[in-house]
View 1 (cartoon, rainbow, N blue to C red):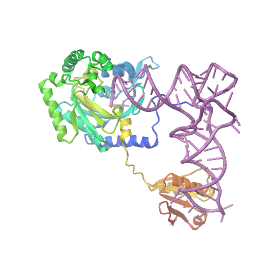
View 2: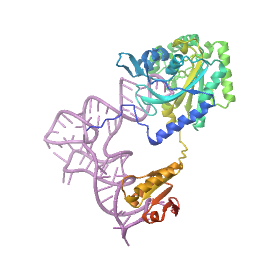
View 3: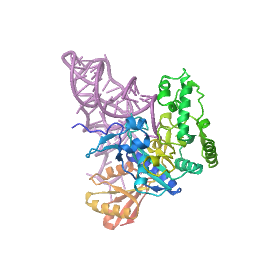
View 4: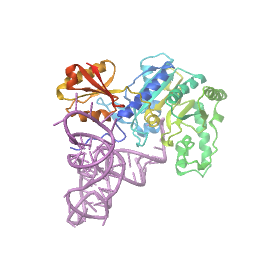
Length: 397
RNA sequence: GCGGCCGUAGCUCAGUGGUUAGAGCACCAGACUGUGGCUCUGGGGGUCGCGGGUUCGAGUCCCGUCGGCCGCCCCA
């Protein structure tokens, strides 16, 4: 029989990596608890219109990366490519009153070409501040993202920029196009991009262009600009390693104001962005709610797992072995009794020689081996061996 | 979606078109029978990713396909 393999870009998360995922989630959970977040789990499958409206018709995510199909009722559905749309939909559907801080953790799906730190099913931890406006909520939003990452001990920097607002975005985009048209020293990709997606030219990896494009801040209203500077200052005061990059842009249409990325310093550029987000003041309205300001971010768990080394402190392992198969039941009883005392205990069930059981106990890292032996058992004892010192002692059953 | 590199044992890999495809590690079992690690000995395990083609003969050459990595695109 030919083996059935996982689909391209889909994978099994197992053992040590699963442990990492869970630890990363725990650290985020503890940190978000400090901000009084509520947790929410929304469906993996939604009507495709939700994402078209939320993420943007013209984005690559919607144009070519969604897993799309018709369900049995003929509805057009999609596996969620990101988390914000579903959370905002739920916010409206559950008729929650703003303000709300909602956090989530789960798989997202995008049909991209997979590579390291990029999978077709990937995991995000995200947080949404719905019904929050003002620069302090921008500050709180970035802090709620930075603190958990810092707790994980990852060496990062925070990069921020502002998109100013709807009208700013448009007029800036126009000005940028005109600026780029006048240049013939761009790479081939950028020459194409300057018409289709001029903002993208700004973070082109080919830095030989030596561009000096117009700054979006010059197109931003004074009050928004002031708040942006205040945000930057407050973040520095809070000890966040933050800097502005006027070329930072985000791929989702719904962002309106502050945008930010958290980048790992010890990682190749392709995987270095481990978390990103920003302000989206029009999305709630776009999905049929009242005008509601909001801010959110999502962390890429798969990428964080590449950087995070857990200080795994598991309980020491007790391993129960027996000298003959007749004592298997008794060994099992002892194992369960120790588990009842909260100890981590394991044993083999197949019949193997004592030597083989010992070898196995050693391999799986047992700290202590409980030896259930015939002689001792008759006298009402079992033997306990310290696998580090080799010392043995008798314990009454 | 585009381009490049790659695919041989569980893992890392070797294998000038020519017998029954190898190594190290890992695994299993023994080494004067109730005790792990070290050493020694032995053993199991491979449709050479999959499918075609060329050839007397293909792991080796060609095509396709699937998968991985890297770059692009894009993004967490």
